[in-house]
Image (cartoon, rainbow, N blue to C red; front, side):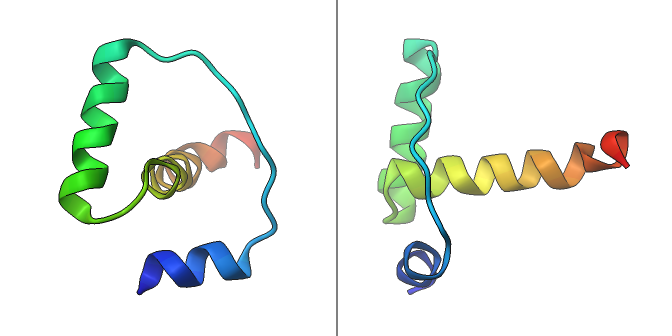
Length: 58
């Protein structure tokens, strides 16, 4: 499974941030329906965001 490979191959660090309850519930619903954990969904979202906006730092 892609999720298992993701967790095995990347160096990880912990990060904590505040999120609206509605957004957390939406993330959890996506995770459940995707058969993934919330951490995987958040990492995918951050990766997409960085890909979209990385040009600003180059």
